[in-house]
Image (cartoon, helix red, strand yellow):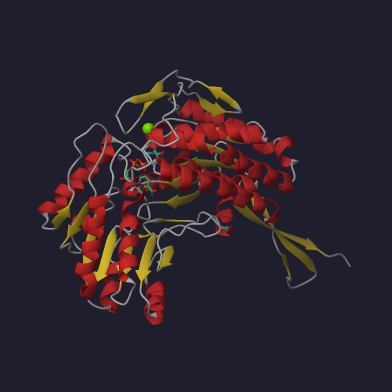
Length: 489
Ligand code: NAI
Ligand code: MG
């Protein structure tokens, strides 16, 4: 079934600095590809250090400009709200761009990614004039209070799995707090961030407040991480690059760092759960967005008594998936974002087989153009196997068995990551004990991927630090200033 959305024709793209679309200083470009076919969509300006310098200069000037400093917090909020409305008004165009560039089914981009993007902007619009300090009853003849001031110019580096949505998670709290931003979208998916920057201008954000430098990680991305005039860097992506960013921040100006990195999240089904529902959700917890989710429930832990029942349900769901063109409304699984990602995933599948796990369904590249991988499920997985420990970031589910709650806690936490966990049980004591025991930033009880702009998200352990969304994200973009005034006699 064809959808109402069709793949758009996209012109070559310049980057977005100081309110204008500009070529890169070097004149270099790169291609963004359509992962459904492997064809080039268009050329995109390839930014590097010189372009980041220009963007930072614009962001610094904007940060200090009267247009921004004299704008009331309420007005900043109104602009964010308007941006949310513009995202909604242009949602078809944005959804089509996202599906073209990333490969996600249009029913996801149209009904999940883009509406959530609009809602995140609106949510932070509400915060802009509610960011406030405290009056503190200090000892002695003093009047003491805190101000929550914007940290300054924020560098933001985002991945390709939720391109528009990640831009909103980064811009929303930064702009609400009064920062200005330089965003680098992933080189695989630069199109929607550029369009969002145009919509922000239409909403009324002054020039220089939002800048988008397109380019590669080791060039444009690294220039952001090591820049001496960027006050804060926020990153979402791989653990390895997160480490490099922290190092670059340490070796440059000690800019503030927040990192949202990978995961290997346990999704734990107890025998007393509503097993049908739990298994249905367990499928989506991993396979949503082709498995390209940092919080994917990639380690499914099932109590031994219901193990076979759960395996039957998830395996039959895997066999029912419709792999195909993301612009067909019936498609439930599109391509992986790139050849590189597809090859990594196929490599993990081979490793899983070699290490003795049993591939019960899938396991192959699909014989067609584009980067399609069959939905794959591994049985007989042991906790020390590579596929049980490393983030695969693709449609590969590993299923492990546990015997009782102590065993479940032990296996759940046997990972370097700590991003999310799912718990399925009808026993309140089990739910409470598990929620307190799993080391993860998000715990979903009898649900999974229950996202909302109001709810903080981020990692324990090597999944990173700092929280995005909710009130908590504002801490990433504010400095606390304590003002103590002596009271005269
Ligand atoms: P990546 O971490 O290389 O890319 C994420 C962003 O970082 C992109 O914008 C990229 O251009 C930028 N980047 C890359 N190298 C950089 C550097 N040296 N300095 C500054 N910025 C840099 O991730 P990649 O290679 O696309 O995916 C590899 C793996 O990372 C995936 O298989 C997955 O396991 C994980 N990943 C996790 C994500 C998450 O949501 N936490 C998102 C994307 C990837
Ligand atoms: Mg692309």
